[in-house]
Image (cartoon, rainbow, N blue to C red; front, top):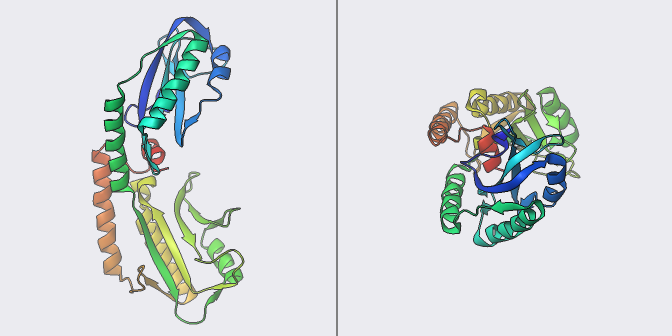
Length: 264
């Protein structure tokens, strides 16, 4: 299924095959080429009915395409990475008796940097905190209360609120190491570009914070410990909505496969 390569997110490099080649002959050659630096690489092949799909055993392909992701949270694809990729793709082409059609490096770099600019601009993580009104909370009792509230405790100690669809709606940190016994501050964190607007991640996070503050005798504060009123939370919700509209206008809607790939 050709959605593994996305012309908005990937630089697409065609490999023309001399004759039809079976998937099982191609796959071992591609095994070693899954990443360049930390940018994922995907391959698709064209079947004899003209459809493109991920390379699979039992299929026969008349043409291939490689796609390397142009940008993610750790930066844009750079000249060095691109050169390394082309060098490794030439080896693949030699092994498969294919002809590589190399896109112009300068224009690839321009596209990569523009995409990186988008990632930087929309890389928003919003947090609200709950501060204890009295004594610090015992973490053991706290975890039980958080699980009742719907949080999952992950093996790495992260606390996540599932979105009901296998994804994460928002996260929670106790701001302490796993060994600590108490904490007096909880932080709820929303990874804005990675959550579908329809799930209203910020609204759900604010509502959760309100319930927790009441249940745990705490107060909702911002990062500099100033109390956050309902009015302030509504204002932020308005900013989130316009942020989502901008992302959608750029054809990279929040929470889409495209956005999740870019903001990884």
